Image 1 (cartoon, one colour):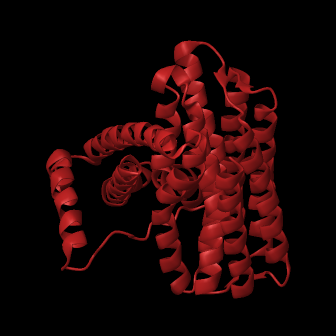
Image 2: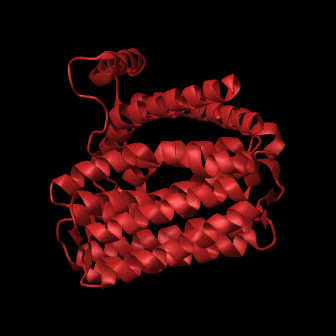
Image 3: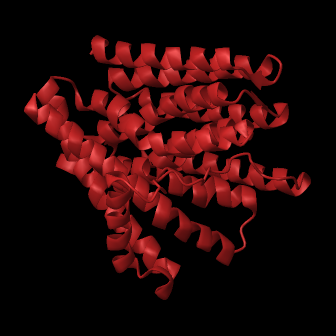
Length: 352
């Protein structure tokens, strides 16, 4: 029991550090990149900003492939898939409860179609339990198609972009009292000394953030494996629920802020767009990197991943039905989504 509690404490601390570093340093450096190269809002949001908000999941997915010769690759995949389930059910559900949202029919259809295509590709790759170079490339090519569609969409309809753009509202403490604020400022000060703030270019802030995120993610994979052994569950179950939910909490807090501002559509569409990035880039890029380095296939496809991916497909159908009934996600439907997620977590834990 003490080992499990210790692991949970380390995981909570690591996830908090990831949230602070991503929010305060990594995403701002990516924003500077977008400004420097004058990227269109849709492309910047769906690429750089999406990478920023998904940095923890992406890093865990990549590093898990190199841990113990790839024996823990399901931890990374589980974090991505579990995070996608959390985003669709919890983030959209909580956003609707905070403020029922009206959505654009065209935007929903566009993103849901691409999202279903992403899940279908994921299921196809799980069919034989291994990933090849061609399959990894297919993930990245499909995301390139998504970026092209977003670019054409913005060119044809130059309206305020909320679709596909990662929410970047601050989710870290801003109050000037309390131990949490003091801990937050300690992290900011330490990272500030490494990055140099305004005195050093944003490139250094980017590189230092990537390095620190990688180290923390490496620790998270190890701790998740230890926790799984302590409670008698497969590591992938811990990844699908605890790691996935923990790394998605900052996005949930940002979505709550946006929903309270009356921009519920942004929160919902951001959840879908973030999932497209997580699946296609968060899995495709790490797979391609490890395949290029090792030159052999990546083994995947446990029963837990199959079940969770099928749940992911079912939930997007449920969300689509909700969004097409009056083009509005109500509070009641938000509670239904939260109930489905609770049932999913219980089934995942008890069924294992």
